[in-house]
Amino acid sequence: MKSSTAYTSIRKRGLHLGLLPEMAAAVNPSTPITLDHDLDTFPEAGRRLTVARYAEYVDDLAARLWAAGVRSDDRVVIYKTANADHWMLAAAVSRIGAVVVNLSPALDARTVGVLLQRLERPALLTDGAKLDLLDGLPLQDLTRRVITSAGDRPGTVSLAGLAGAPRVRPVVRPIDEAAVITHTSGTTGIPKLVVHTPRTQGLRLVPQWRLLSLLRKKETVAIHVPFVHSRMVAAMSLALLKAHPVLLMREPDPAEVAGHFLEHRPVLIEALPNSLMEWEGLAEDPRMPFASVKVFSSTFDAIHPGTMSKLLGASARPGALFFQIYGQSEVGPAVGRAYFRRSAHKANGRCVGWAMPMGAARLRVVSRNGSPPSEKNPGFIEVAWDGLAKTYFGEQERYDTQRRGEWWRTGDVGYRTRFGCLHMLDREVDMIPGVRSSLEIEDVVLSRLDELTELVVVRGPDAEPVPVICTADDKPVDPGRWRAAAADFPQLADPVHIPQAELPRTATLKVQRLELARRFEQRLEERA
Image (cartoon, rainbow, N blue to C red; front, side):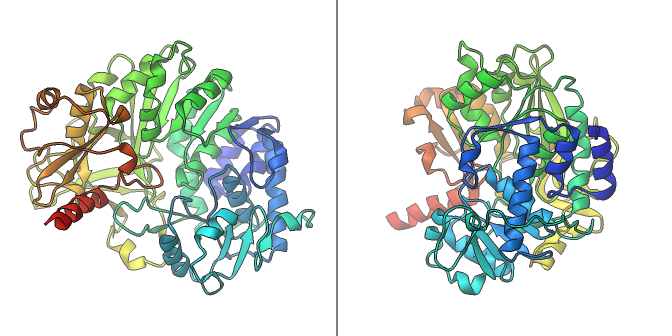
């Protein structure tokens, strides 16, 4: 099968996660998949697979899940220790026609309990470490059955004990019915469960397929994305169907990352913005671990221009670019923009891009107060296309409050320039009186103070903008340097310096700004 044939099939029939490994193997069975860790479900597999072997493992796991009692239309929650086998298990669940529910291993027991209840007694696929964490929950009431992906526990069904189960024929879910459920980042509380269908997942590949088409040679694609995220579905699908060797990474440590990049020489790196910030120091590594990279890609959050500039400067490839996609779980890729080596450092970090070519999402900015949206009067950012998520599972009314006909209100505010570029200024819930854009302040000050590893502007107890700063090794920032760097923003309160480990984060490493602000308010109340 040609990759173009597989792509055409997905555009017409939707993306079925359970069929994807088999389709990729038909394109090229020898496409390599390299891991930076061992698989929990198949520890004997080692760290170097082929896509054909990968597809075989998925078929095997599908048979075991069927033998464990999972059937088509069942909802199966996968909540386990972070491991690349999560994606294999998700494909196996999908292969027998069940609905995959991916929960981040970073979620706490209370949150998992709430989501299990919302899902109306799903099957739970987990492991010993997570069962220990969930020990206080009434799992027998919250779930239909509990299956362990590795190891064995009383009262559970072990996949390991079902090795050799008879293979079953794949079941294809209807194109517009729920197929995969992921969750939002939870920056404002309990995450929402986002329902994706084969159609919506397939459509989301369209604009990104063109980006990968820029890579003529079949060089390695490095992916460092949470295995549970909806972005992982797209990243793996695109790379495997294009028959690119894949380096699938879990570990964020810069020293380990550098070793893998030096060995595999990726042409494209897909990673979280915060991971890329953490790897900035590798740009100074004399071994040049980024030398082979043609494309850096990030889709989760706006990234600071300084980070992009450092990474691009560390590439030895002519025409290297950083491609940023603005979107969210509910809408997929909405707009995009390429940054280049000579101009990235001068880029306006709030300009997140333009609408992508035909077949992708449409965009508009709607007034918040009756006056036309502009730089001084930002409006609500809305997106429309057939790639929008179907609903929030168990919260249809909540979904409907953000859906206006074909248009989805993202929760972000911004404006469009006369050239059509979307400027995203802030999340609506994070806006601070007297501050045009907290994100803009962070971009500017971070670019002026190399000693900062993180800067987050949050609303203080009296609605004042409080800059929370972190530094390498927690070294103090010189007050004079801070005043000079923040001189353009006199409304800022004095900076609050905390260890970076104390920043509350989501599963995709976004800072939970509301939680951070709440902690400051709580500290003041405790001192009063």
